[in-house]
Image (cartoon, rainbow, N blue to C red; front, top):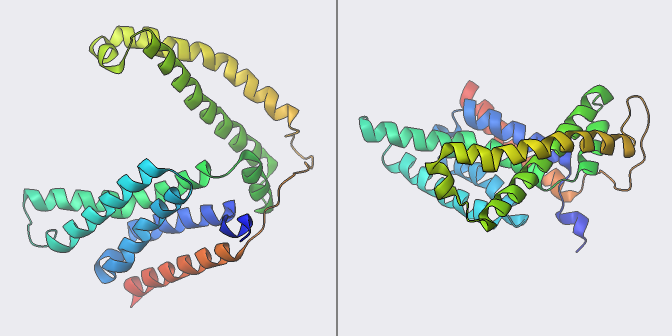
Length: 236
């Protein structure tokens, strides 16, 4: 089996993120089709499990199952304090988080080259594509730099427990070094964008291909079914 067969295009991931966010939050699918809603709420965590985000995927699967049980058994029985807690749990894990988790999978599993090529094929203007790519790379670098600062402080015995008790030391030993690193990171990211040929109005060659495979069409079909559930619940 070819590796491309098991790989989603970035455009498919963005489409799934938008549809999951819109239909699960604004639709009444949970009432009319609770099993289908639970399936679509689980879908992003399946993809996260697929790309080896084991911890996040397993936690998400467990929380979605618990939220589904709470919605089915208790939400419409208890209208007091426990009913409010149950409603909050179902809204967060069955409506809000699936779209965010799908977007996280889209960004985690796609390289900057894939994102750039996909955005250009979607006819995004260069004035929008370049800032998106630069900011995405910047925030990724910020996360890596923060982990490095955190590991360095841990070697000196400055753990989270000690630093949270003394917030001034937390700012001095954790945030100040990070801010000093970020001043150089911002310049490096800008230089990197220019080195890779990201210029407005100029074509840029790419070593990868962005095209739809069988799995992409299958995911589009799943999203069309979800849209059908939403429209049926809203207008039927």
